[in-house]
Image (tube, rainbow, N blue to C red):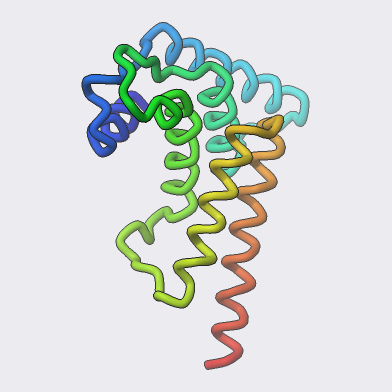
Length: 155
């Protein structure tokens, strides 16, 4: 997670503006594992699925906000919501999975960008729970499965 946070900072050229608060990131990890432990104990299961893993990590990243502003810039709104942008990026990377090098068709780009925009909006302004994020991820996966089925049937 630390490496992905660093990569996000570099990719967005935030090196002078944003730092990773290690103590906060450590708390994210503790909170995540505590939730997962409770979940596994309650349901008496040994393992959880990848969707739950990413939903719970994203939730605690969003809640604890490990990216801290060290120097403001002219575009303060973008920096003020840097943790939400990071979580959206993290979730989108998970959703793309092994297809990260696949490019969208031009006719699908607008729909995808609306999805990204909506996800960022929800992460910024709505009450977010781990379960809600899990539902978002599962819905996306179900949509992909449906799309593949339709594509298969048409070909």
